[in-house]
Amino acid sequence: MEFHVIRSELLTELQLMMGVIEKKNTMPILANIYIQAEDNQLLLKATDLEVGIISHCPAQIVEPGEITVNAKQLQDMLNTFSDNQVSFSMNEGSMLDLVCGNASFSIETMSTMDFPSIPECDFDDSITFQVGFFNDCINKVLFSVSTDPHKYALNGALMNLVSGELSLVSTDGHRMSIVGREMGGDLQDKTLDIIIPRKTLIELQKSLKAEGPEDEFKMAFLENRIFFKVGVRVLFSRLIDGKFPDYNKAVPQSNDIVFDLKRGDLLNIVRRKAVLSSDKSKLVRLTFSPGELVVVLKNSERGESVDKLAVEYDGDLLDVGFNVDYLLDFLKNMSNDKIQIKIKDEASQGLFTVIDETHDVDYKHVIMPMRLTG
Image (cartoon, rainbow, N blue to C red; front, side, top):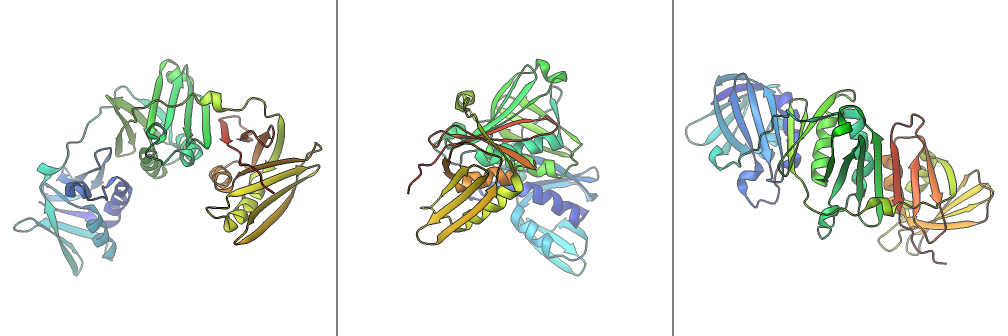
């Protein structure tokens, strides 16, 4: 096997694939990337058996062939080269030679026979979404996905599609994110109720960001797997087989005290509170009084942070407490300039929404309260 490739183009694909490379070293072959040189392009594959990605890279093929090599070592080698054209060739035995200008490397290869079989999807029966829209949806729910392995069904986001109404939902038991949009069109007759793993959403978002926001991508299903075709790349993943909780019951219906705030102003305030927070001091207190919001975080070991913000409010004194990390996650992952906080009382969960002038997406974020002390 022998081929020549533009270093920057191969590195771009490698960087997008590194997230699915197995890092636990349970099976050495899963740390490798599959490379097939044929028809003036490289076919690239990587998988950890749960998530995988298939991509292509233009190349000048001198002699076709296929190999697998350690992905991290290959990436590190390419990063050290200064010229942009790299030549690859197999020498005698199982070593792959890389030559770039006056520099060269040799890297051990492994047989492609040991590389896991990769499922294929023809995308004949697929759903099409706009890249920018779906990327924004992932932003709005990803931070609420549970990372607790004991909460298996919550280790991903629920994707629900009924009568053209799309919902993406995530929760870790302490907070919940719900983004919805009326899709209509060809999706009117589609029905979905699936849980997409957190890692899959992260890898999908990397591929989406490599495309333009107005571009489109395809989503399809085969048995218990989901497939995404984004540009020249195909991402696939197993779905989570579990029961997602009834999220509609978790959305408060009687939070009738409403505050409109500039997201940037509150974000700066909460960032200051996060500086003083610790595992033992996560409580940030929001005190609303006529015309003013006072935000306080106290840490007996580090100090105290106090901010005041003018608000339109003429009701009774209201004290509420939330986890500072949860509040920060919500604020920094939104893109809208204005938000709403809807409160019932200090013992009830807070409902956080964005003020969307286009009314394009309906978004709700629920945060459980923290008990106020002192």
